[in-house]
Amino acid sequence: MRIGIDARLWNETGVGRYIRNLVWELQVLDKKNDYTLFVSKELRSEDLRLKNEKWKIVETDIRWHTLKEQLQFPKILEKENLDLVHFPYFSVPIYYNKPFVITIHDLIINHYPTGKASTLPSPIYYLKLMGYKFIIKQAAQKAQEIITVSQSTKNEIVKHLQVSDEKIIVTYEGVENREKGKKSKDKKFNYPFFLYVGNAYPHKNIERLIDVFVLVIKDYPDVKLVLVGNKNYFYERLEQRVKGMYMDKHILFTGNITEEELISLYHQANALILPSLMEGFGLPGLEAMQSGCLVLASDIPVFKEIYQDAAIYFNPLEIESLSATIREVLQDKKKFQPFIEKGKKRLGDFSWRKMAENTLKIYESSTRVRSD
View 1 (cartoon, one colour):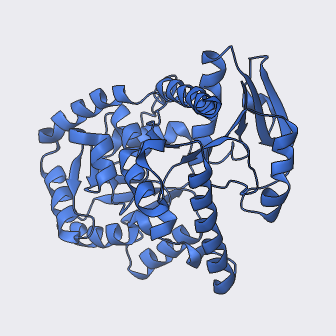
View 2 (cartoon, helix red, strand yellow):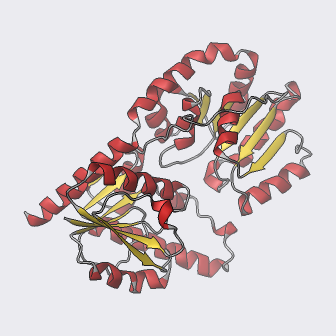
View 3 (cartoon, rainbow, N blue to C red):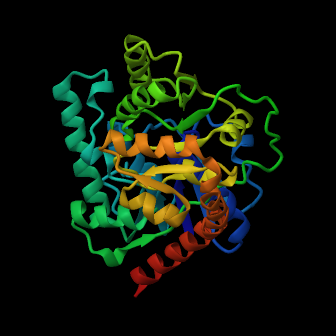
């Protein structure tokens, strides 16, 4: 087969991590098929780390979510005469009419639009939002098969995109061994703290988490909340809110940090808190478990699916529910040690190699279905 992979989002965080690990594992696993990797022109060849001669690179300056993607990218794809293309993100050119598979990581934007962060006027933003919904629905219906990263997201796809559940295949993401070769810093904070890792989009429920800590510090004035994530519109807005509440000594914003610094925080934190209202997967919780960090997670279906009995759950809509859980941890963290041990065992179900093996089977089954 000649297989194409749209890797234009290589350097992005969530989807980029998925693409990078898929490509690195496939080139080890598959010595039979030929691959064409479509990448952005600014991507350095050494970042790709390709060591398989059956892989070809095609550079393109076409960005996702653009008119050029819809009108010009199909021509670039067709020129390569591919048997199958894998779009690892929903942004698919609707005029591409040859066989493809698509990975849908979540449908969060269907429920929690981020228009407040857009620099576009509201009517234009919501026009683009309608375009997104149209494109993802068209792509899902035209795809040979749909890959998704959790059963919870599969249920969402069936419900909102009106496709048969038989064409949707769940392949869990992996978790890198971030501990390997990364020595945690010995420095210890001189105060107890809880950790959050991720962005601050509305569905992450961080404003409610801040309200929880207003209650907690009344009884535990030394405890801190440390928020880790790249600063953007939503984080900047949160910082202003925290300052206005005179909570900036208790709630700390780190911005972007190194892997070594993140590992250190996981090791030292009382717990990682994930108060999300909706997610597609839940990688930070697995990373925390790898470092022996206790995980407190909202009781949404995807977290219960991924973490199972290795996390402590709370109602993300009730401030008192999380506040009580935090107080329990502060009173006696040792009694939660069994959850940490279960977390380390839970990691065995998540492997990028396993994800790539399953994806390769999907490529092969997609072409077999077409030939039949």
